[in-house]
Picture 1 (cartoon, rainbow over the protein chains, first blue to last red):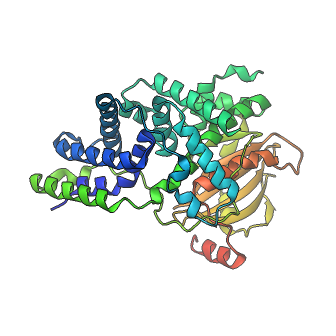
Picture 2: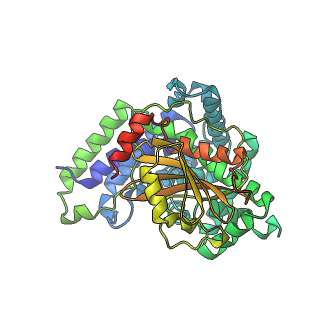
Picture 3: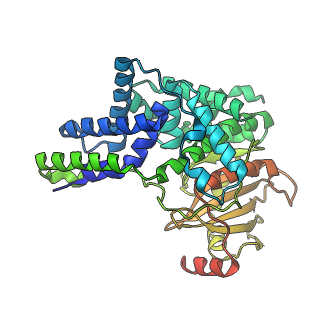
Amino acid sequence: MSDNFSNDLIDFLPNLRRFAISLCRSRDMADDLVQITAEKAFAARAKFDPATRLDAWLFRIMRNTWIDMVRRRQIQGTQIDIDDAPDAAVVDGAKTVETTLMLKSAQQAMTELPQEQREVMMLICVEEMSYKEAATVLDAPIGTIMSRLSRARITIAKKLE
Amino acid sequence: MSDLMFTDEELMAYADGELAEGRASEIDVALARVDALAQRLALFVDTRANVASAYAPMLDEPVPDELRRQVEELARKSDADHPQAPQEDTVVAFRPKPAQNAAPRQSFWKMPLAASVALAIGVGTGLFLAGNQPTGGLQIAALDDPEIVRALTEMPAGDSKTLDSGSRIEVIATFLDDSGAVCREFEYDHAGGSTFVAVTCHDTTWDVKFVVAAAPSGDTGFAPASSLATLDAYLVAIGAQAPLSIQDEIKALSTLK
């Protein structure tokens, strides 16, 4: 037996994995984070209000799980060499060299941001959430979200100059 | 007028379509007059487009088999413990996801390396044809004109036409976005002197997705090349495919009638 909850969560795995990669900055650790997030989500399934957005709820669980993992294991976030990461952009032969370089440097600039700025960038610029939705996921006032987002973008623009 | 009338956060919110309408209209007006403001705005438009493009390919990566298997197992156990609830259909749907298997992008639309924009107004969906957006002094609402709608549905790319209002429209290209919707890039010279380059995609009606404006210029004004860098970034972000051939364009337009 299945219903929308399970199917929606499974359909959302690529997005969860992408957000996890941005939080962990490591693909191996990201897959663990996605799995733990899924375990927690299924365990808390009865608490999910179907009138709200499942994607925001899942991101929130993932982000809190990650903060918890960092605190418990004293992980500071493992830096990966972006050149070692499989990158779909690179295998697309139709793209220009400049585009590939640009994508890599934008990703690199993101990995160098503090987590609190990186996560607002992911939710708003990549996952296209509104400021309000991101504020709910991150449990922070909108003013804080905006100041992190603006600082992050100014930093990234300087790095891409 | 100084560009310092607006804070970075206000310009960012404007670029993200999050600024309150009244304040957004003030920026619309100021953008036409203050070059420095457009450059500050470009930073927020460009960083969003660049970062979104950088992470877009990750969605197409296959989820590792082991992870998928584990989650499916979790789902199976959980579903067994939670018989289908009657309200299941009320789960709020996700926003539509980009197509997972979009055709490989062609290099026609090049990602700008350092885009600087003359003037960019409002990036978002359905901002302008909605008819309920005050647009300050720029009169983008004029795009609501049925003559324009007809021109978009009928004119082949490369043709231009002067409308009854005295404004001129030129269709630049026709292409499909990553969902297969027919999109048209066109230039619009308002009779009052402003020139816009816009992208509109057809769902059930024409939805204006993107507009860049040139500062008011002469009767043959064109948007300066630098503002087109932002357009290119936008086209990359929506997975725009290369422009259609003349035959394909005729076919695509005939499906809209």
